[in-house]
Image 1 (cartoon, rainbow, N blue to C red):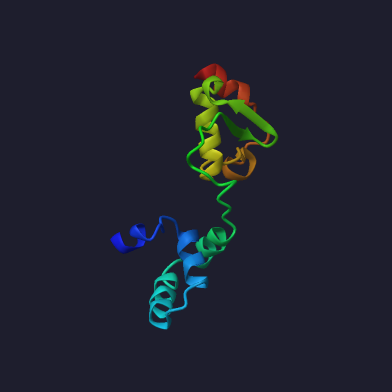
Image 2: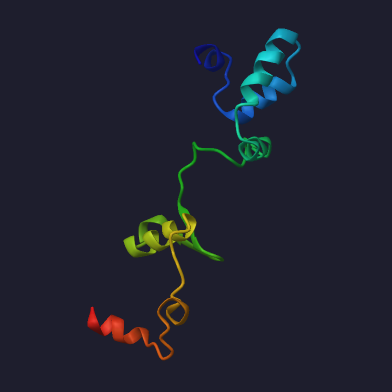
Length: 115
């Protein structure tokens, strides 16, 4: 790892770019073996990396919490953040009482009032 960081390679995209421009055949084979250990989807993402756009040095001011909805980080509530994370991690199910329990006339307000 140290030789990579000494050469300025800190991300996978930088490593792939260094591999593409490598002239030493021995180093090229070594880099190819290392690259083959990464999943294909991760490699495809790293090939699309753009240093000017994908920078981690800038301060994040806004967050996309829903499609077409960006909010200032300081005004996002915990509940909004939890919902956004659950959607991103696919932890939210739609309520399907008819198929799961066989209840025809289901009113969500009854559950809310009961709680």
